[in-house]
Length: 342
Ligand code: NDP
Image 1: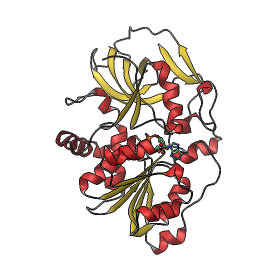
Image 2: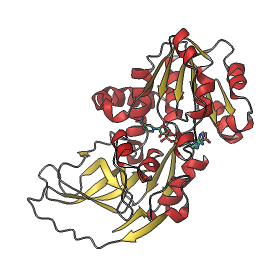
Image 3: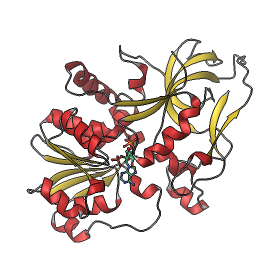
Image 4: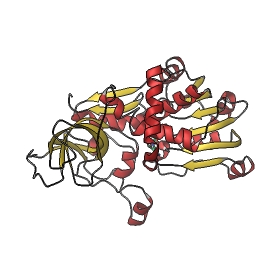
């Protein structure tokens, strides 16, 4: 079983040399009462938050994070889709297609109580169940509908808008009849947002020197909803352009993951006088919405109102570059690695 691990904790921007491809023998014979399941990984997710689990923390910091830090040398957890190749758990049998918490590697031995569910692909490619119909999709759905409580016609701003979560938030917002502007890190991405995904407008934040006035240019009448994937200066600039009763879903702050320096922060007077609601959230708290999320998203997919945007690399060896390139803006849509052919 070949798998990817970190050599040491990673503090700062991740690079190729932080990772290592390891190999360990794997026996496919399981005690029938072990409750363990061996899964051949097919598609594994590549997510920015994994960097936060690669850092070294003091014990007090670790308590305030939502997941424990990875141990150098050990396999890295990730969401993914796979196929059962051996089962000591009566709920699964060889050949089942499953989704759950797997590893960045070729196989995962899922221990008793591990997160694993049988997957009904519903006629969609398996990769969709890692991205648009998986956790990224649920994040976009819960953050947009539950946290932002959008109404038709409202003005929505999304950052990292061509990323996995961002592109879907924008597409949900367009499907609802909102006015949607996205920010992204290149001219090509801006063109895709407008021409392929139907965003009303988009801009390349790397070309802008004053984000506050840039956002004002795109939202002369203010923002009703800001879906924040990046934090930092963009968050401060977006909040200062919010309308009264605006909502900010703080989904992620990727600009701060690689750089611990104190950044610009939103102006609290704006938050008070404009009665802005700003809320962080974790998609894992919204499993109760999974059924609603799946039926809404599948309906939109079948009707062609939204489209999947996937960025798939091949082979376990490509996991490190797939990952560190997230922090260089190299991905377009949901980044994942196809580890094996179904
Ligand atoms: P993306 O597919 O959006 O990939 C990351 C993107 O972030 C890159 O493509 C890049 O695009 C942008 N980016 C990278 N570095 C910076 C930077 N320094 N400043 C601004 N933008 C940057 O990832 P996801 O869709 O998976 O995740 C988006 C955000 O949502 C992340 O912050 C993530 O941690 C968070 N998240 C939160 C969840 C939750 O439950 N709260 C669940 C899943 C994700 P560009 O070209 O635009 O720079």
